[in-house]
Structures are given as C-alpha cells and as structure tokens.
Image (tube, rainbow, N blue to C red; front, side, top):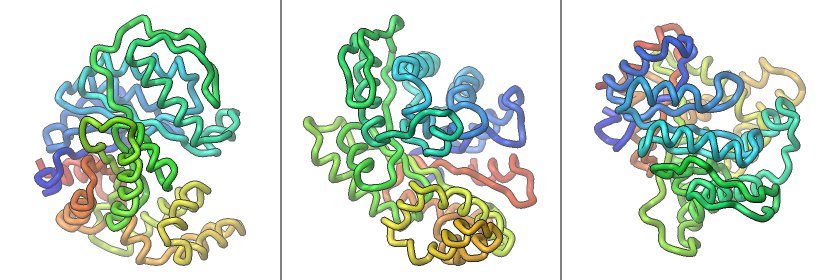
Length: 332
C-alpha cells in the first residue's frame, strides 16, 4: 500500500462533493484511512488557507500544506500575516507552498501584471524568511518595496517554505533557498529530471541545509478499471492544464513536445474536441494514474521510489462516489 512505502501520504482538499461546513467528517475519514496530510490549492474555488484552518481545528493529527499560494495576489505583508496565522493555528504541522501561479489567474482574473515571475517568487521567499523570523523588514526588493514591516504576533514555530517549480531556474531556486519543492503534472519517470535540477540548487546553497529538501508532488488519480473511461476523464484534465503556457513549456523541456504538438495546434485553432483526441494514450497513461486500486497504488509508489517524499493525491472519479474512492486509496 502507498502509505507503507511513503513516509507521508496527502490528499487534495477541499473535496468538491461537500461544502466546507461539512468537511469535518471528511477530514476524520481521511485521517482514519491512513492519510497523514491534507494539501489545498488556490485557483478558482476556495482560497488556500480556509480549508486548512478548518482541518487544523477539527483534526489535529493531520499535517497541512498549501500548494500553492501565488506570490502576486497578496501583498508581501498580508501574505506574511496569513502564513503566520496559519502557522500559529497548527504549530509544527503547516507547510507553506509558494509559486508564481499563471498569467490567467494573476493577470486576467486579478488584474495584476504577471511581470518577472521568477524574481517575484524569489523576492517574496526572502521577504517571508525575514518577516516570519520576527525581523523588521526594511528596504526595496527587485519587484516590490516593503519598508518597516514587522509581525506583531511572533510565530511560535516558523513553517517550512516550499517552492512550486517546473523548469530549471525555479527548480534550482527551490534547492538553493527553500525548504522543499512542489512538483505538478509530471510522470514518475520525470521526477529524476526535476530533482537533478533541485540538487544543483542545493549544491549552491551558501550554507549547508539542515536536511534534504522535502519533495511534494500532486499526483492525479482516476481510480477506474476501464481504461477507456479513465482516459476520457484524464484527457480533459490534461488539456485544461497543459495548454497553459508555463505547463506547455515544462513539457517541451521534459521532451514531450512532439507528443503534444497535435493537442496544442488543435487547441490554438479552437478545436477542443480535436485537442482531446490528439493526446496519445501513452501521455495519458504516464501523467495520470488510473486503473483498479492496487494498480493505482503501485503507480503512486513509483513516484515515491523516484524521490517524492510527500505524494499528494488529487482524486477524480468517473462514476463511483468520490468519498469511497478517496478512503479506499488511503488503504488505512
């Protein structure tokens, strides 16, 4: 079972089948099923912090993480306050994931220029390091200025900061300055390629790290034994993500460009149905875990064998109830 191989096993929250007010029993179920972690995201549903605050109060044995909060959509001082409040709510159990997000979320939805994303993440990471340590932060960074801010409530246990990273620049930054890396939309075999860049960053740290970086990976799982049904679900997920420019560039870097060119051309031409049909089965099978429960567990275990320390499942069902699929995959 997956949780017997990995030190930790996470599940993506919130669950679409339940309101946040009803999540208390879901959190109890996932803890009983063997999950150690719940990890939120911040796209177009709930914000990333509220589901975790509820879990902190309702299920104190769970570890909590956000993968990710964008560096652009909150000012640096407000972001520090939010992270500090979450860390105070769950001392020693919260990890903060920081990333660029995308031009769609930052610019089109929030009206904020998506300018110099690498530098913005780097500067935000450095600001948070200082602020969470209780320092008064003075001076200008390359992408913003924050003069004289200090948290009035000390953080009892400073949370680790992980960076979401796709290509070499951000992967190396994660290794050089963060406490861990968050991976997304990659195959089990791609993990080694990404972690080689993280290792190069670790080698460039000005001082040795306290330990190896944590490696969090969100893994998309469709627990459906019928391959045709599972692949139909998976193709919609792949098209929704891998047509985003950052993810397209990521998969070109991984060498998957020739397999995905047909999808990208059809999508750019407005042919959504054609884009789905152009995704090869090989790509579907390597990027989305699917099959019966034991097949899914074995596939997730390959990510762990490749170096992922916190596999975080994002479960999508074709016809079966989500709650039962989630608990069954935990295997507890």
